[in-house]
Length: 284
Image (tube, rainbow, N blue to C red; front, side, top):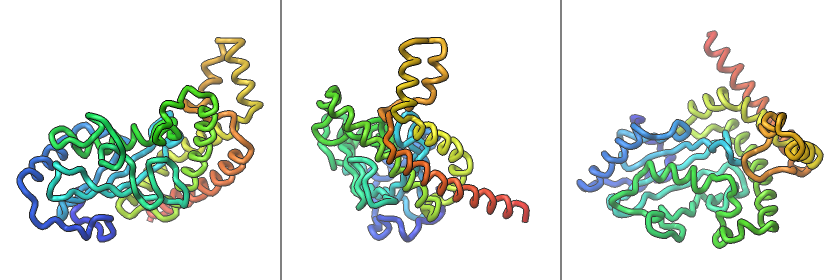
């Protein structure tokens, strides 16, 4: 819990002066859940002077094109909460969408928020829905392994080889755009989470860059070699398959390779400068 909410929080101006007992009861429930079972790769910050505001940082899950990448959201609770769902704003760090449900202008399509068609438990419930569920839903349902099929009506196309290839191509674009977003995030850290961003980059970006290089190496030749091993020998299969992502990506295009390798150098240099600055500060 932070002492004061930042003035640039998306919903700072919507100050809820009078909050009813139902709001406080729901908030106590949410805080209890967030403080006990929140996953390590999701950080939720509340503010002592504005209990109606929250900010969320989500780390992309393993096995998705969002792995190791950072995503930021501001949350505002109306006085009618939990009868009405939270307002949520997504912060984009580029000019192109990295997911069908996340818009550059900050709009989010999610049934839990009432901004997407849903059924039953997919929709917001005053009795059972909460901030923990919201954060986990964004990570699991939106930032998933095949975001191409998040588009309305696309789920039924999942078994069609034509659309499977479109999903793979979409994942190429997502990985490349995520990398460019990470560069922007490191250059201008999101104010609410500056310390967490730097710590994540220092701790995890080496793994992220290695992962990107592995993915960039999977052109048609390398991918074909690994597939041939898969078909001919099970003894060496385990080590080779570790190179393969757990989502549709290879064989990657030449354009993907060039973009990822070029931007990886930029991110690596930025991280190195942060580490050097941190070491200098600690020495002083």
